[in-house]
Image 1 (cartoon, helix red, strand yellow):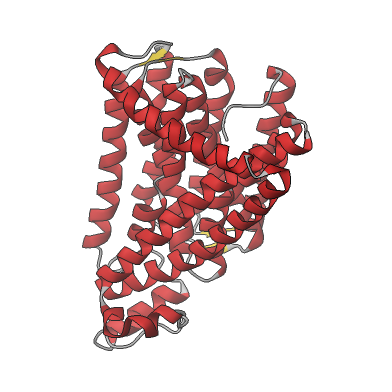
Image 2 (cartoon, one colour):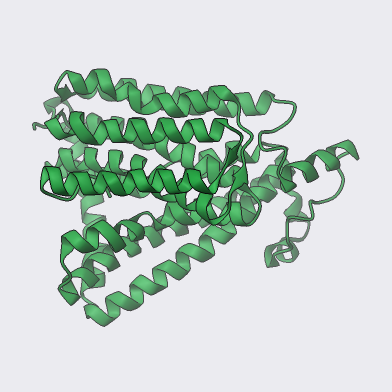
Length: 376
């Protein structure tokens, strides 16, 4: 694997990301094992609080700006910022294969863990246009012709990033032009329709009052203010996720836990906890628009945009296991999830099937390929 000479200046970006990640890890490890456990628990609390705030802020921004909550959810939760930082770190350390593995592993975990978990915890109705689901299902297939060539290059990265940008832009523009938003059959969607019928006056009952409503006063009617607060909450989520990752690594080392066993169980949940919260919690609170928007946006970004970013920094020689196991697994699970969403209601057995396929993937990777699979 070689770093493209024309992109040598990008090493500075990767170096800065690696240094930032290293500073956080070093700070956590300096606290000792007990300190790492405290940081780990604190990061979980911070992640939960910021997720709750993001849900409330996005719903208010959607209402005040008369924008689709689904479109806002894709914009704010679809980008996997922590995975992009990790891609910079891996690429700077000439670990491009690991960066690709993280991207594919995230795409698989989003459906195999987060969407599956949401369906099991609380089955919910789905109201999505077929074209959105086609984009979702097709996204991992874009990688196939490139992977068959044996080496992913800068040009492939440009194509993947272009597909990601066009897909996001298409969904957002389509939502702006729709007379009725997606998920209009949810409690929040129906309340929005009632408010519009009454002349746009009032606030949905599903939007429980939060302290910020009183603190902001008249500014609470500004959608821009809620977007700014959403950005702050999202930054808190990304920071909490980084602390969560660093704390879990320190705990592994401190307690001498077998990394393979820990990685295949608890660590995978730790590293996907951000997406679990951003999917299950909105659905539990009656905002499936945010949960499904996170799933579709995250998968789309992971297998196109994030892989494209990696290829802007370096070329990747494709390992045979990518063709025989990892990419096919992402394609199959994503297509199956798209079909379940197309049916109009995500049911509990859908979740068990998606989760079972994810577990089967891990077992095949460990037993057949002799090691933990690539990914989170």
